[in-house]
Length: 136
Image (cartoon, rainbow, N blue to C red; front, side, top):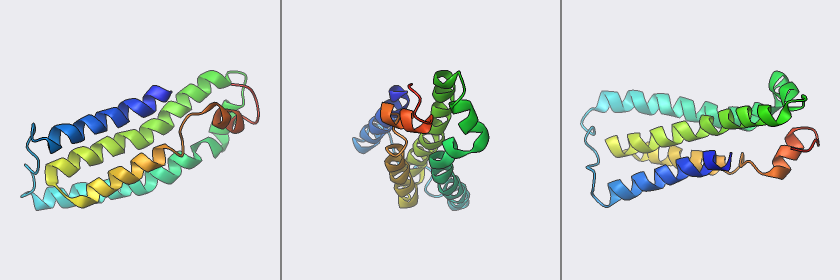
């Protein structure tokens, strides 16, 4: 599960490197103001909803019951992957949209999602706490 955190962060870092060094052109969709507005609105909603939902995902009854079941290691892998994807996919999307439109809002949302990733970082102590003290 650690790779599910570090691979998207590495991809984001490589994208920043590629665009900031000029290997790829940025702002190629900047003149499409309507498309930019729609994308910005959608990504704002996705970001605002994804962060609290990902942080509270393991507290929902049905998911928590699966995490404390006999098959807790498998369930933790599945739901941990879902939680990481809920933050990583919009983070990468915001980064791509930032370089398409060169609009700071996308960049800020990407940074916020990056910071939120470290609140769901899959450590063994977090695993222990989220599965009611059972060993992972």
